[in-house]
Image (spheres, rainbow, N blue to C red):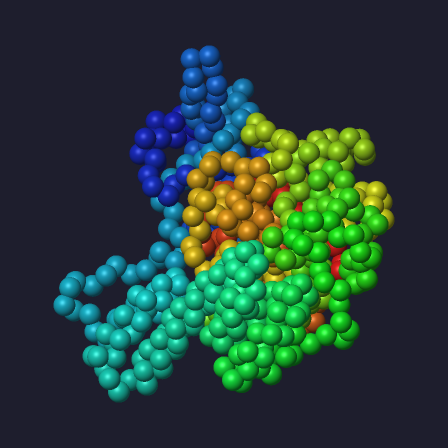
Length: 525
C-alpha cells in the first residue's frame, strides 16, 4: 500500500517534473533494473529519484503512461543503473524513458553565477578563462586571459596562460589548414594530377610536421604508382625543396623497386608479396585499394576490412581538452593491423546466430539488415570473432583502443570540423541507429566509416582511468584485469563531445544496450 501511495503521488506531480535536462532514455533492462543513457558526466548521482514512463501503441495512436518510480543505484561516466518500483500489473520492460525529480546539471555547466557587469577583476577573468579552456572554447579562454592580463600585467601565471592559449589556437589553425591541403592533394590525385597532389602534400608537411604519418601514407601510394613523375618533380623543384628534401627522401625510400600498384578500385592481379596482403589474399573475395589509397579486403557475408599501416602517433587529448582519463597525451607505436570498415551488422551477426543456434539480438523495432547489431555484450562480440576465425582461418578479434584511436586519429575521424548530421549519426538527430556506411563524408583518412556515433564499440581492453599515466609505448593493450571494458566512438544518442576520437568510456562486459555494438580487427602480419 505504501508503495502504491508513493507511485500515485509521483503520477500527480509529473507535470512539475518535465523540465529541461531531466529526461533520460532507457537503453537496457535487467529485471527490476533499468540502464539509462545519462551518467556522472551529466550530473546523475546515486540516490536520485524520479518517474518511469512507458509508451504504448493503439490503433488511435500512441499514449504515454507512468508505470512506476525509480532510484539511482549505480552511476558510471555515461550511463547509470536505476531500480524500479512499478504499480500492480505493470511491467518494467515496457519502460521507455525516465524523468528525474530535479534538473540534471552536467559537470562542465556547474559554474558559479556570473558577477554583475563592471565588477569583474583579474582573478575572475583568470578563473573564467580556465573554465572556458576546460570546455575546449579556446577563443573565449584567450579573451578572458587577455582581459586578466590587462588588469594585472605583471602576473606571470596570466602571461604564461595567454602565451599557451595563443599557441594552441595557432596549432588548431595549422591543423585545419593541414587537413585542407590533404583533401586537395587527394582531389588532385583522383584526377591523376600527380604534380599538384605531390606539391600539396609537401606544403602540408611544411606547415604541420606532426601529420607526417598521413603525408607518408599518401606519398607511398603516389610514388608506387607514378615513380617517374615524382622523380621529375623532385628534379624540377630541387631548389625549392631544399629545406624539406631530407624528410621527403626518407619517406620515399624503398628497400627494393616495387611494381606499380593497381589502379584504385580494381582487383589486384599480380602476386601479393607483402606479408599483410599475402596472408589475406587467399581468404578474401576481393583485395584492392580503396578511394583513400588503403588496402581493403572483402570477405564472405560482406565483411570488409581496411589495412592501417603501423607507426607512431599521439594518443589522448591535448592539455585543457577532454576528460581526465584522456590525459596525459603521449606517443605510442603500434604494428600494422586490419580494422572493420563498418560496425558488424545484423545481417552478419544473424548468420553467426543461425550457425551456432544462439538467440538473435533484439533490434528495438528499428529494423535489422545493414544496421549495426545492438544488444550484444562484450562476450557476444568475442564469440562472434571466434566463430569467424573458425570459418576463415584468420584470427579475427576486437580492436585495442590504441588501434581504434589510430584509425580515427584527428579531433574527429573526418578532421577538425565539428560534427554535423551529414557526417555522423549523433545527438539523437535520427532517434535510432542508421544503416552502416550512411555517412561517407564522415569517413576517416583511411576510408573507415561510422567511427563517430551510431553505436559505441566494444574494445578488447579492460578500462582504467589512469592507464595513460604509465601506458606501454609499444602496442598498448590496456590493463591485464579490470571490472569494465573500454567502449569508443559515441552513439546516436550522444552529443558532439562524446563522439570525439580521443573520448574514452566503459561498460560492464555483460551490458547489452541499444547504443552499443562492435567492429572487427585482425593482426597485420
